[in-house]
Length: 515
Image (cartoon, rainbow, N blue to C red; front, side, top):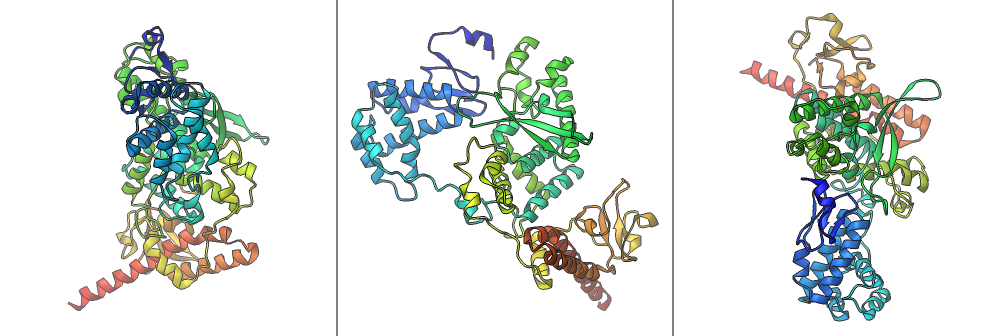
C-alpha cells in the first residue's frame, strides 16, 4: 500500500472521513479499516441518471460522514430497489416499499429518508421534488432506541452490578491462568471501565496514555485520552475525551504498551525512535505491519487506521473472555452474552440510578448532546432486590461467584503447611490462601471470590454467610439504598456456593464410607 502514490492519482479519487482514498468509479469502496461499501451492486440496479446522482451523493457522505453510516445508506437504497424491483427512487417506489413494512420495521425507510432528501438537496439527478414532498409528509417511526434498557433485557440490556463485577474478575482470573493475552485483558477492562465504542478503543494510540498528571493533593493521576467517534465533521482522531483510571487499569494498559512496542519492532526488524513509538496503535493489527516496506511508509500509515485492529475485533475479544473464563449471568444461569454496547448501557443506567442529570450522562457516554439519554433518566431501572437467606442459596448456582476449590482439610491445600497462609473468620480457620504474592484484602470476605482461596470442608462458612446477611441488612437500614446494599451480594453468592459444595462433598464422603 503506497499512500503517496494514491495522493496523485486521478480526479475522481476521494478521501473518506477516516483518511482512506477511494476511486469513485470502483465497484467497492474501502472507507476505513473493516468497512467496505459495495457501490457497484447498487449502481447495477439503477438507471444511468439515478446511478450518477446516487454515486455523487454517496461520495459526499463518504467524505464527510462516518464509514459505517455511509455503508448503511448504500445498503438501505439497495434494499428499497431490491424489494420493489425498481430502477429509480420515485413516489411509487417509496409507497410500494412502505407497504412491505410493519410498525416495527418502518424505521428502515426512516433511516434512509435523510439520504434521499440530501440527494435532492445537493442537486444531483435522480430524485424529483414530489419524492421529497412525500417523505416530508410522512411521520416515519424510528428505531425503538433504548428498548433493551427499558426492559432490562438480560441478553442485550445493561449489566447488573454483579454481572459487571463478575466480568472484570473473570477477565483478570483468565489472564492469570494464561487463558487470554494481555491484549485481551486490556481491551476487556478498558471497554468495561469506560463504556467507549469499539472504534474508539481500537483508535487509541500509545501517546494517549498519560501518567504525568497529579491531583490537587500531589498524588499521581492516570489518564487515557480516548478518541471521540460519531462527531459530525470530524475525521480520524481529531478530538479526544480524557478518562481518569485506576492504578490497576493503568498497570494493565502500560503492560500492553510495552508488549505492543516489542511486537511491532520484532516484525519490522528494527527499533523505532520514541516519537514513532508514541504514534503506534495501542492495539495494533500485527499482520498489517508485515506489509510495511519502509520507515517512511510506516509514518504515513500511522496517520490512518490501517495499522489498528478492526473495531469488529472488540466484540470477538469480549466474547472470547467470557467463554474462556466461564463468566455466568446470575439472571440466566448461562454464559454472559456480551457486546461493547452493553457496557455503555450499564454506565448510563448506573449514572441515572445515582441521580446524575442528562448533561452528566451525555458526557459519560461521550454524546455531543442529550437527545439520546432520555431512555436512562425517564425510566431508571433498579436491579437490586431484597436478599434473604433462601434467595442467596437459590442464586448461588447461577452466579458462580466462587472461583477457588474446596479442600477436605488444611493439609490438602496448596501452602497447607504454611501457617501464614491461613484465612480466619472471628478466629476460626476458614481456608487457605494459595498465592505467594502480597495481598492487602481484608480477609476472609474478599477471599470467597478469589481464585486462590481454598476453603476447608469444616470451615465456618455458614457463620460467614449469616454475618454477611446481617451486614447487608445493617447497611440498608443506614443508607436505605438497595444499590449500595447490593455491593455485598456477589460475595454472599460465593459463600453460599461454598456451603453447597461442602454439603455435596460431605455427602460424597459419607457414601464412600458406607460402601
